[in-house]
Length: 458
Image (cartoon, rainbow, N blue to C red; front, top):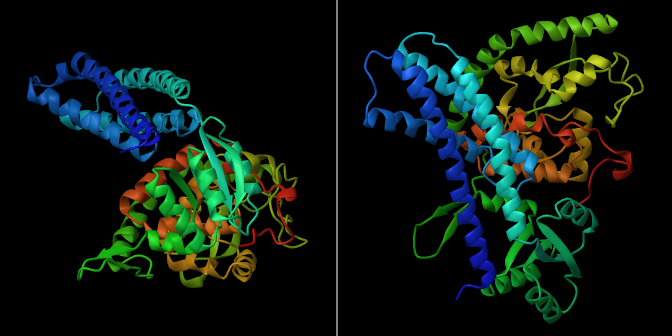
């Protein structure tokens, strides 16, 4: 028999899916109205029956898939702001694709004004409906009552992170894994969920099996080995299950497809964004007369060193006293630099690095040599990130923050490597636009949260 908590979890998932489908259906109906009244009348052969269904079906599928990829349908799970921004990205991409689809059908460059009005209306709807759905979610479902089981590592930092989402979680108890197991079980039974942080393997396994038996929702902060096993393949050779961990990064086929897309998309992006390149270069030169580009040695696949290109955002003598971490309100950043860093425009010259083959569009962030050597000394597994090329954007950039610890960066990047797919690349590229609206994704290090090395010890 399923517990009430398990049933409520399934109920929440079902309601969220129905809400998402209802919202996309509303957007599709609005598109149908614009198509019928503004565009189909231009077509020499009027669309009837199946033709209209196909047009609407294509729009519905594109919108739903992009919203799914950008996590725009996770009402109640994500912050309302993140859901809205994800939906805005979905609307803009879907309507852009649909407009060019209409132009191809009509065989002319048609009037974009109706689609622009539709887009503005869609943007309004994708604020109102997520607000309503999120309000209903929080009204109906109270935060999960959780117990945190910790091991050797201090769980204080993790608890602070959980406190950032009081709408979702409430850690009401903390217990050490060194306590008697009967005492731990009593705590588990009195809470809705448990989060396990750095607990020895034997105890963690006992907790996990107990929670599985009792239908207690379990959250685990993974160790590096957990992330690697998470990407393993099932090998069905005989009646004993086997998991295969290849440990080779991407396959030859994946590398070839990824390289092809890197070249094509980077070339297109450079062409489309050439006016931005020109304006940025003029602004940097006009401010202080210094060089336009910033060059620095970085580490990419297999530990190879390359020279990264960025638009210069700091004064030219910013590192005259050696390498320094960037902090909030860093005085070394120029006025133009502050703007281009906030909008990530300073990263655009890396498209040249991608065409050269130094980087990929998606991959772990390329670290400067001294940071890489420091992190590898503190965390030997940090070199695992170099199984793939460094990237302009990536898993750690999307789901982490600028000041995410090196250990967490490693785990996030390993999740990307071990679960790689072209679809994941597309998802991360789309979600990168969401980070432009998140202040914490571009903020500097807060010195009070760093030890002398800036590395979070294992």
